Amino acid sequence: MSDKQPVWYEFFAGGGMARLGLSDAWKCVFANEWCEKKATAYTARFGAGQPPVCPELKIEDVAKLTTADLPGKPDLVWGSFPCQDLSLAGNGAGLRGERSGAFWPFWSLLKELIAEGRAPRVIALENVVGAITAHGGKDFANLFCMIADGSYRVGPMVIDAVRFVPQSRPRLFIVAVQKELAIPSELVSDWPTSTWHPPSLKRTWACLPSICLPA
Image (cartoon, rainbow, N blue to C red; front, side, top):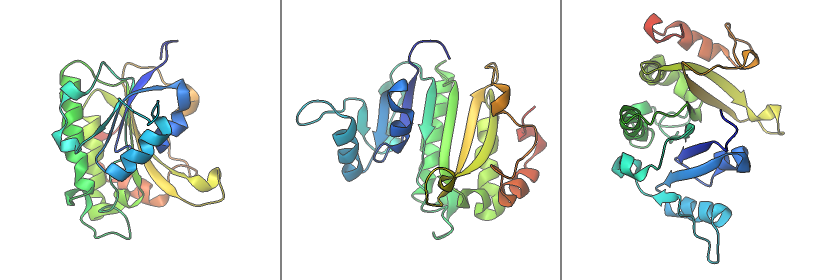
């Protein structure tokens, strides 16, 4: 990254938890949420004026967005796509489900952005750990290989909130970084670790086609 403030897009924004984490060190130039109630909470937190207005937030179904809605070239695209069909307590529909299937139009939009020469330097996806084993790991493999098919180095990890707060809330993160970008050595591991890579992730990873794995 350069010394200038990096810019990013937040998809499936909800109440803006990712934005709270990145704080003012990053500038959110586009956010998307389809639920009016969640968008109201987002605007109340990040909007300006009275009543608050949040011009970067577009309240719309992600399937109806086009690249014309997306300003500039982002350093980061963050997508916490719906988890209901991937949750271990859900209906088992996986990425074929009505809710979690929102990933597909999101990824189509991102591919169009890349084709326009506006590829984000980093893509980060977040979801429940059920995404690792949905349909015997096939959903994870499809998702992972699609991202790796671009010019990105991709790696998954599971982070449990219990490492930071008194509540266990494990979540899957898939991080993709453009291949030409240098990654600090302390952020890269050639081997899985018990801290970030539980047995379910190791098993699913072992079944990935070799073409999808990092070079």
